Length: 159
Picture 1 (cartoon, one colour):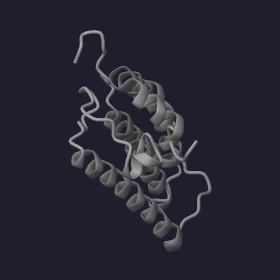
Picture 2 (cartoon, rainbow, N blue to C red):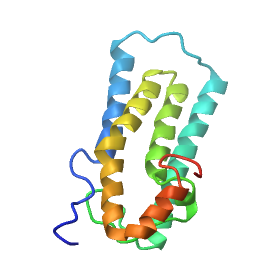
Picture 3 (cartoon, rainbow, N blue to C red):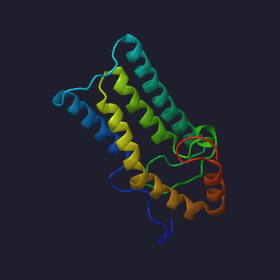
Picture 4 (tube, rainbow, N blue to C red):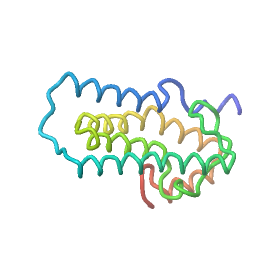
């Protein structure tokens, strides 16, 4: 990697952001009274379905990256621009999966702090990781990155 191209991420790494959000939600669940929140087996099942979907999205994205020999570590240089699989409809399927899984925990554990934590983690990861990664990918892959970023939304959907 050229000295002119900055590394994509430094501390805080995205797993630290989401891990901190989960820890905060668990802690707040013990310390602060919980507002009225849906509970029961149907809500718990819904929550677990979201957790499984989020983790499944994470795994699918990692497998897709692995098959294309793309680096998955957020603090190392990109080795490939992955645009297939989950990356065809989200430029950040791992962060999206993390957000979905943490949101699901709100229902699985009847703890609304997880929903707030998921939202705050998604908001934090955008400037602290995603924008840095996008700048890194733009410098490495140029026109190919620009075309991909114009047709694929940052979080979810086609443009």
